[in-house]
Image 1 (spheres, helix red, strand yellow):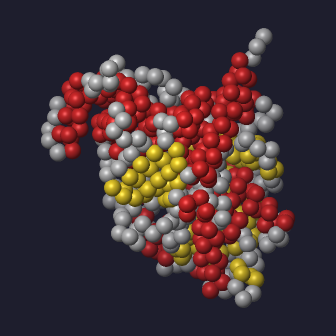
Image 2 (cartoon, helix red, strand yellow; image 1 turned 90 degrees about the vertical axis):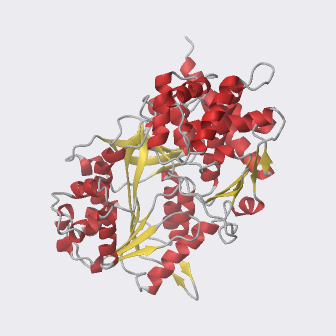
Image 3 (cartoon, rainbow, N blue to C red; image 1 turned 45 degrees about the vertical axis):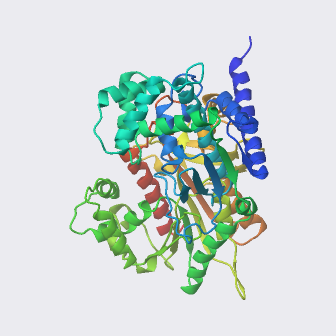
Length: 559
């Protein structure tokens, strides 16, 4: 009996490989036309792969609404209107007077040069470039679907398209329009029912998008129609400066240099130093939340975290930050382009009696440590920044830093459980390569057994991109001898940097404690549980703070 699932897995993995080979080729070449031969090679591979996050991308009739919302929140406002898109490095656009456009859910500077041109800064390495190109390819696929419905067999504009255009013009002029009729016009191009269209319109309205679903669908179709009618061709280009900078650790080196120079200035190089990669509120609130808000009564740090997240007036979190800045916390502002914010905590300035109840019983003995808390890296950027951070600081002398532990508090897709569960990796396996990184994780499932969360322990897959995963490939990782429990984008890159620093460069102790723990932000194997279905929201607070507290407990206990 033929196992068609294995054939599909091989086909999918081959499509991923083709995508990355083609993307790398186009990057080196410097430009491509989305509807040209090179662009269509990306489209064909993406349609073969049919990633879960892009839902109905392969359906020739239906527009994928959840995937579209996911993509538009990670691309700059107005990109749907642009004929020319250029990926650039930091090249002085702000100094030239351009105001950066920052996407809602991906911190990167983008610049609208004119009505037809959008420039997007790429400072996070190849992962960032591949991520953008994949999202753009998805948009081009959807725009072709819209165009095909807007034109008749002779290439003439349909009446339905003209009606949608009237709605968009009225909306731009802040004029009232008949929303019932507008929904009908829009549904013709979405290939969706009226109810599905109404739900889609509301999703875009309830988000932080500047433009409505009417606007986005119209402009995606309009630019595609103009290309079909030979009025203007779309093009994606890469600047020479970007091609020269990728892989050179330029931004990561500058970022790490500022941190190490600060530590040296404070004479903290030989203090016990603990590096934590996490979001910037969980460690901050765990250390300072109770002391900063004495007029509030909280029974736990999770309760405090929930209240600060639900604070409609947005006053509580600034109070905690201001208190922290007066009691041993320092912020290293990022102007390097990494988009990685950093907080440094001098625990010598923290009164242990002011800590949250979960941390008060942890014994803080000996010399007080210094914490370096860095925001989430993105893909290969994790190697660049961690590699540079663990190197000695080279001035007139070479200064080694007393790194005691490195903790990764991450979020990842789970393959064996549900959203909100916790994963403890025993190894990181790098997708598409023979690279694998077994590790001695100072965390184990036993550290979390007393808590009300499902905990899974085993290998995790470091994927090339979350937007390129489908069920066939993910099932292979679960059911094959890999026995993978989850997938993320940074683990192998972090571990490669740590191992090279500890075993080859000898810039940190070879017995440095390493801790990895992830909470499940999605399950890409379950319909309706992918990243495109929405964020974990308040459900993510519990596991995020639990892992953060476990990290701090170990640090305070001197391990």
